[in-house]
Image (cartoon, rainbow, N blue to C red; front, side):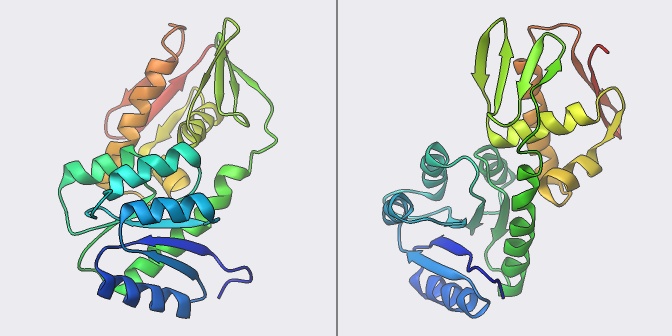
Length: 232
C-alpha cells in the first residue's frame, strides 16, 4: 500500500475487463478512474490530477495512441502504459515513440500489470533527481536540463523530458563507452528489444539536435553501446 494514493486514469472500452482491473488495483491501494472510451478519458484527464495512465489502444471515439498524444501536449511527464490486444512490433514502437513508459499485451495476468505499474512508479523520481542541475556546455551548445532546452547562437529549442533525460545521461558519461543495457536500465528500468529500438530513435534525434556542432558525435560501438564524443 502507498501512503499517498496513486491516482490512475484507466481507459478501457471492455467494461468487464475495466471493472475487474479497477477493482483489483483499488484493492492494491490505488485510486482508479475508469473511462470507457478515449474522449471520456481525455475529458477526465483535463479535469482531474492523475499520477499514471493505463490506456487501451483500440477504443471508440479516440484510440489510445491519439489519446496519449493529446495527453502529452498537456503533460510531458506523466507515465503511460498501453494495454492492447495487438502484439505487432510496429504498434509497440509507435507507442514508445509517443512516449509510452511500458506496454502490456492482452491477455495478461493482473500481477504482471501490477509489477509494471510499480516499476514505472519507482522510476518517476529518477528524472527529478537533477532538478537543480546547472546549465552545462556541450560543445557550442548550452543544455538546460531543468527547462528541457538546448541553446545555440542565442536560439533555444525545447526538447521532451525523455530526450532531456537521455541527453543528460549521455553528458554524464561523455567520452567513454556507454553500455546499451546499462543506459536502458537507468532510463527505463529494464532492457528489452522494443525499448532498445526506442532508444535508437532517441539517439537519432539527439544527433539531429546537435548537428550544428560537427565536433560532437554519438558513435555506435557495435554490440556494446555508444560513445558521446564532445570536445574537452
